[in-house]
Image 1 (spheres, helix red, strand yellow):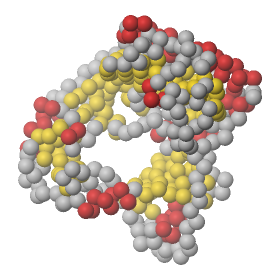
Image 2 (cartoon, one colour; image 1 turned 180 degrees about the horizontal axis):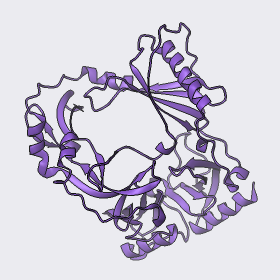
Image 3 (cartoon, helix red, strand yellow; image 1 turned 90 degrees about the vertical axis):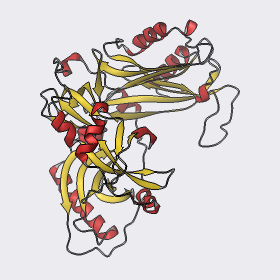
Length: 423
């Protein structure tokens, strides 16, 4: 075993009091954040000494400690004891279950300051959840920290994920937005969608606010999306057309989802291939390959698909497509074509058609009886605008915004105001 990995294993064993455990398996992994920086993690699975054999291939025994440590910073990213049971001897314990002491421990463990870089989001019995912030203002994308402990105060779970940016990346401003100032945008964000009710097996027409970030100037907007990896997404936005189908069977190959990472790569902080930009030549070949794939598998769909983005992931290039015609259904038709980076050939794909097909059995929506203007007046007092620092990939900076959202919607047939969580 590499001596550097052995050292991290010993640090882990001592820190978490794993004298009653043995190391069952371990390995290295890497990931790329949205600043395009590569980080490496040593993951470990420690079995209790009395559990010599794994019960099956899919689950670890009760009390197993699954722990991840950043190879370069030596900060622990997670430590989870299976089923909340720990056999740790002289491990981490929070005396008197004191919230203040737990927060101090999190500060020491992460190097972050409470109230400045993270704050409490939820507090339950045996659990504290924190969310990333800057000077008390929430961030997007949002990092999170979670701490769980048993009735004796013994740590049973810890995780810390997020960017937690330095002050230099924040464009500080005084928040000046109000709902009155951006009412026109709020009205435009009220959309009619068809939400599936699994209990009633029907589609319900709902007016709901589509989340969006409005910049502090009250005019510019940033779309709300899951932005964990979109820095490396190359935008294409090209509708795919062809004249003739391709009469050739598509050879679907098994995807290798786990990368092999060496100790030398990890300890030298070698940039992941995912950080490399997709070249113009690769882009053109991928567009051509996606076109040929569609000609094979979707021969009658010329002009019906838009290639939205290309991005690298785990040794492949993922081509993300959306149906050209947007429906009012809350779930839109999506397709992902997976391309081998070695030969730029499509090797597999994922289509959400099967999921969407099950909604065809649902009862169709009732007629629309309420206008969007009337619906907005019903929701007006429920619309929320909360300050957020949002990372803008073009400016490479966090900018102050208001997050426009609403937890309620209006049934477009009956006019009833309903909680979206109840759907």
